[in-house]
Amino acid sequence: MQKPEKPQNGDPRSRPNKAVFIITFGCQMNEADSEDIAASFRRRGYMLTEDIKKADAVVVNTCTVRQRAEDKAISQIGRLRKWKLAKPEGKLFVVGCAAQKLGGKNLKGRFPFVDEVVGAKAIESFEDALVTQLGPTPETETAHQNLFRSPQTAYVTIMRGCSLKCSYCIVPAVRGPAVFLSPAAVLKDAADKIAAGAKEIVLLGQTVNSYKHGQTTFSELLKEVLALPGLERLRFMSPHPLYFEDDFTALLGRERKLARYIHLPVQSGSDRLLKLMRRGYTRSQYLALLSRLRAAAPGLAVSTDFIVGYPGETEEDFQDTLSMVKEGRFTMAYCFKYSPRSDRPEMAATLSEPGIEARLEKLLEAVKINSRVILNERIGKIEEVLFETETYGRASGNFAVRVKAGGEPGKVARVLATGAEKNSLMGKVL
Ligand code: 5AD
Ligand code: SF4
Image (cartoon, rainbow, N blue to C red; front, side, top):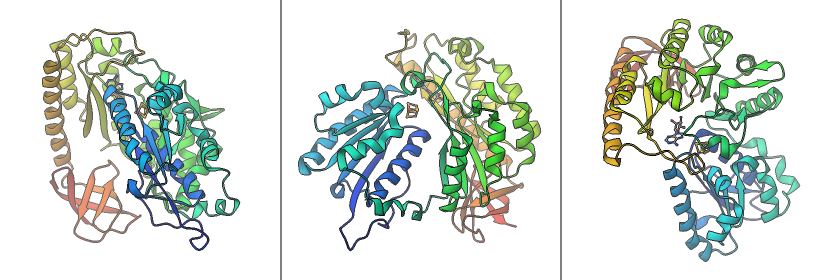
């Protein structure tokens, strides 16, 4: 979530600013939705607050990808009972994936103090919920909407939902099949965010590289966004290994503004599990894709997601996942314990909880060691760094980079990496 800003909207002489507190769980898609929700509130003269006591409205943007995420959202809503008691005129909105899965009736039954429930599928109609609760948007405020500065990195959603059927995943059930935004809508959103100060755009979607709208493919959309004046860097997440075409590889090779960083979830290193998970590729196909991408774009950094403890995971399957860490040369990996989702056919766990925990620990350790090796390999090389402050920025491969001085915020500079510390590269601006 974007840092709260000073009140800029509305005319403070005519009435005091109201405040909204936004809590976001889950992925970047949710973060992007929360930014849009924040913008809707700003158009009504609200400012963002991080102090719940000052909030006149609260939004909980929920996730349900794993049971823990859903549980966290539910207990957060429970805790808001106190706020509502202290401020009965305050409005509480529950939105996102858990809201979609559980439904308004269920949630309002359990938590009668919730004013409005807007599920992930209906998130674009959040504005209607605002109108219901707070009345029509005052005309005068609409004109101010572009006065707000975007964060340096801004998210642009290009698709919603997912049309794949990975066995473990609840997202298609919750968010529905893939729907692509038009190139015109994407370009307008990106251009607005750049005009408002964004330097880096991250295109978002569950299978972002499957983008297809009319004749426009993912690579063509990338080209159009890359042509926007003022853009310094373009990223996207999360792609699926099945959808990288040759025109993308070529583009990655020649476009310096396209980040040399891809987050490419593999989930498992075992062919047997990949098949059970219905991922649509084998271990060697995935590795061949990495080779193809790296051949076109030397130095490409790749991170990934792994699931451990999938039902039926044997020691051999797990060893295949462990060895994948090194072989894939991942800079970083998110590792998740398998979490059974209720609307998936019940799959028996074959490992005890301590057994899964032990595997997770081993995997995390392997990822940590590998990340260190990959980071150290960068020492002595030149990185293109997009600076956020004079001393901090991120390399094209998404590594955090620190320098003593000389960075220009919002601009890319060449930096010689001279060392590594924790998860960052240390360097000198050239
Ligand atoms: N259990 C554990 N991890 C999951 N993910 C998705 N569904 C589940 C689940 N049921 C992980 C995948 C995905 C990431 C966003 O969340 O690794 O890439
Ligand atoms: Fe994002 Fe998936 Fe969570 Fe929904 S369920 S918020 S899509 S991570």
